[in-house]
Image 1 (cartoon, rainbow, N blue to C red):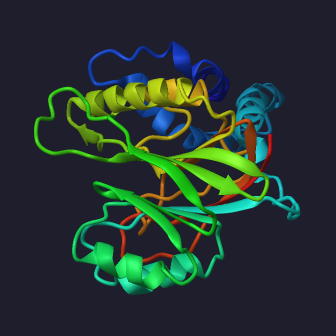
Image 2: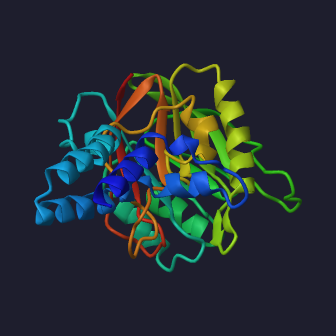
Image 3: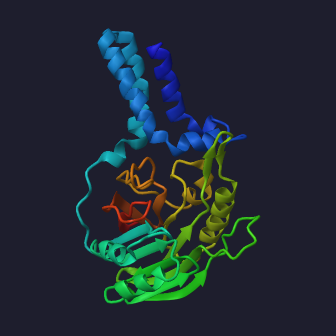
Length: 301
């Protein structure tokens, strides 16, 4: 039984895209928690050791190799700082945040070059503007998303990523050109629709539709260097975000599980790049939000 379970676990890790995304989206659901397949691998390894079964131990090496191949690199130590690299912070601050001033100060304490925020609502928005103004003189807000920068911004515009079926006012994306010391880059900030997990499985059609629209906008972006920061309501393994992960690279190191803040099980707050490298991603201490802030370092591509 250990050998059979080991082979099945390895199969899910190696061939998760073969799991169909039919009703209930079982494929996306599996991929949302794919790193957690490491837990049954540890259990299987423990059982094989207790039984002192050579055959079982050999079988368990399959899922161990699969997990290490897929996620082992994320566990490597954080690389040393590189002169000229950018530091960015991404945070869904929550529209119910009770301490926007404290949240803004906590994010600024990480000394990032860029801060991307989602769920900005009045009157908290004015608090963020006032608190961040001294260190981040350049900022842009469109709808409920915003970008604060140490470097000048230009060509700011809203992104039409509203999924089909939403008729009420809905503006959760922006694009800005950032004039960094190492050249211009196009920064995108986005908040994709939430997904829901219920008895019928994963409900993600609106998130997936919004991801397709955002992916099309980034694909058409003329600027070579692109940075996407946002609450994407999905992990980089989730095929629902494939319109984005097909054209942008995920972080090279770091797990940075960001949601829910009380007991994070997945990183749905993302920093992805094109013609640049997200060398490391981590989390900052909790704020009054239900998300943890993530901080990433951006090096040359």
